[in-house]
Length: 351
Figure (cartoon, rainbow, N blue to C red):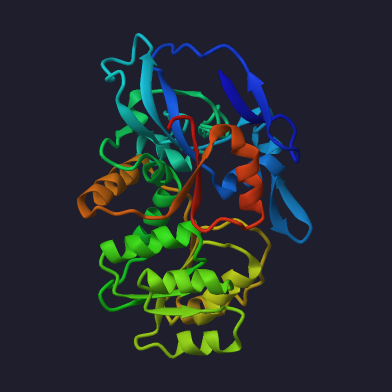
């Protein structure tokens, strides 16, 4: 089979050819059909996250070492299974939950494998979906998506799940409270559609790009703003009932500050994006304003199952996709890095 891997951090993907994997134990082998391309893949190719102040979080120091076959939004058909996998339904189309943990710690046993400190995630620690075939360690990580568009369904494993899990952390009264989504790319578009399905009736979207603001307005946002506009903060601070929550899908110093500055008393800021940087906080203002600052990292297996059920029930398409051949994985990465993607790029190994 052919796979596309990071063989040295900071370098383009390389095409590697090797024997097809053979599933063992409880493993399941998939023939890849689709794999989404995510900003996390860019961080993995570079080998670090920007912590601000000239500091970096090295992925090598966290046990991620090349070669790394990227890709965690994986959809494929079951081709084979190990002797301990049981009946898996050869030929069935499935979505893969990639945020796999050690399976034995308290987080994993509580169903929160995405928060495991010894994670073994597909596309990070285990070979991912930028390959013709993918090994999944257990059939419990497979979710039936028959009937869904394969490119759109693939994005549910990260883009959709990340937006859904962040929205579940908002709290409050969705029928009354204002919600701000920062960033109107693939994640922001997914969150906007999901927020409506979850009952949010007052949604503002902030993005510096005019075309993305126009797209958010066309998708039904009640208010769109340019966070670089000096009047944007005033507009949010003047909202009836105030701004109850902000979900930041960018995650840099400017967007985080924008979220914190515009929340009402008792508001909640949820950081999802990891573009990097740092901020300083006046600590007395946290209790005085009763703010909650929290991070949200992808989501758990139960949430992905709930998300797929919600998408099927409401007939949702969360984000527009553009499908490219698997062989164009590096080109897709470069386009994403340049910001030349309207929704989500998805690699295909099938017509």
